[in-house]
Image (tube, rainbow, N blue to C red; front, side, top):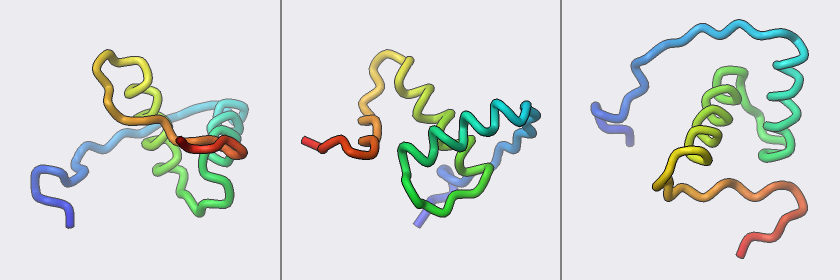
Length: 71
């Protein structure tokens, strides 16, 4: 269950080109093949993964990609 402090309460509107959306869609399909994801969850998940990958001290592992074995 999500606590009150963890609830998502910030909204954002994003405009992008069709080519940018196709790139995000391909990335999401590569990371989560066949998963039923909404546009907003795709954008949020990929943005969060990107932020975690560039910020120092990020302890979150990146998800395995199709065909890669987890250790």
